[in-house]
Amino acid sequence: MNSAARPPPAASARAPWTATPRYTALRIRVGQGLGGKVLAEGRPIRTANYREDPDIPPDFREVALAERFVAEIAVPIRIEKAVAGVLFVIRRTARAFSAADETILIRLADQAAIAIANARLFQDQLGEAAGAWPDGGGHRARPEQHAGDHPRPGRATAAAR
Image (tube, rainbow, N blue to C red; front, side, top):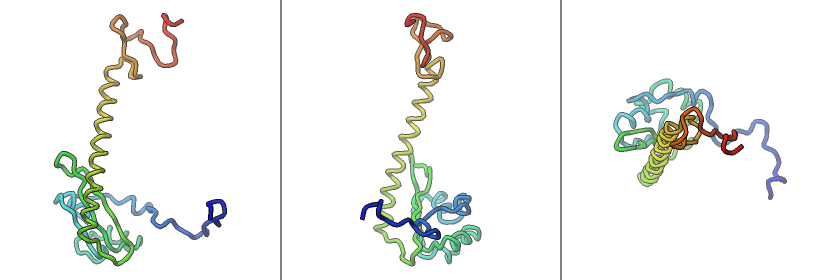
């Protein structure tokens, strides 16, 4: 069946998982909850029953109940041996995460770390490049030019007119 022939979803249908404002408002606190423990300890942590885990703070537990979270696994995203973030996977079913799941998630976290590090390097390069351009617009002044008379994007220079 092609997408044009599919009936529209029912008005009450919800995406398999959509972050609610209550969930997105939560912030990881070092040492609290699964993610906070991962930040503090720098090791993967999993729980088969998030809602019953005694290490979960009440405000996180309330959201877990509302969102119907059951099992959760969190692994550190490490950049240069420091924990730069946490990668979470949450299930709404009573199926615990396995050691194999953890291994896969660690590999994904390693890939995320590489992507984050590359993005930071790119931003650093952009910052350095912008500092090298007198106008910050990507045009380096030629040695015979002064900072005030270099070409800018969209403007004709005296030599080009």
